[in-house]
Image (cartoon, rainbow, N blue to C red; front, side):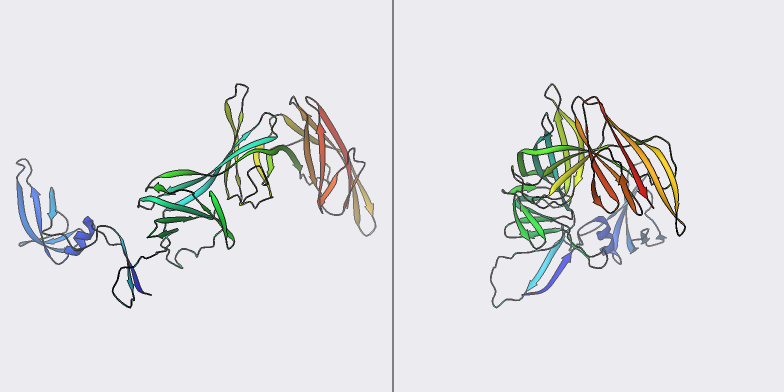
Length: 391
């Protein structure tokens, strides 16, 4: 059983040598200007602040110019930080020890690289564990595992943490813990991913190792636009440009997927006509369980435009000082691409409302949102009209 454990961080340094020499005699060597000769003089080190030196005939509050302090010996301190554990034992013997502790200086992230095919309906994915060691220690021939999930940690200052790494001394295992794998296993509410082979992780080094790969994953580009102008109960005839956002979506199921995906950054590439890969965007993904959908936001569309205008506005008085509002709209969707697209267009509505005289069918997806899926031909446009009756 463990009786006591100590982390000894005091290591040999000029500052520590000065601290240990306080109250003792040191030698001050001074270089004489112009001649270059050196003079030696003994002094009592009174304080490291300055430092304060008491010579035979004076006291100096700093080192004289062109001077340095020389020590007669090296204090008995460690050259590196040490962790010392005191054990109880029935008899003196040598035993293997498995040591688990938390340490700062380690981090990891998941990086995903996706390659989209010509028709934007298939995706090849390579995922990597990106490890970084800034602990000041080198690990050779180490077994490395990472833990994915939102791990709760105490606030700084509540519990003094020794870090985020677990090391099994006898087997040289390193576990880097993130809130933000190769083989995986569930551990409580988290997943542990283990690199399948031993590797070296030196201080200051960033290393990538394969997490997973998936080929020919079904995917689709989604064009979405949402109007939230809040003008259903006021007159506003101005033409409004509504942004169109593009995302790439796929299901975390099959084709090499169907496994828990750690949070990370997804980088997307697509080949140009010459077959050269072109970077087309990146997006962060959250921790994603298997069989869940992944949506990668790629920013606004270049070729799809949505213009929305209020075409009618009526205020109809009703009993009890209430007013009914009849508001008409025209939404024009244009497509400059050489292939047809489908736009997911939504409107957010407030109060008690009803859609009337819509030129296309819609879906009520929540208490305040309706959705149209609008097909738009290549190089053409589609016009949607509808009326909102609200009160």
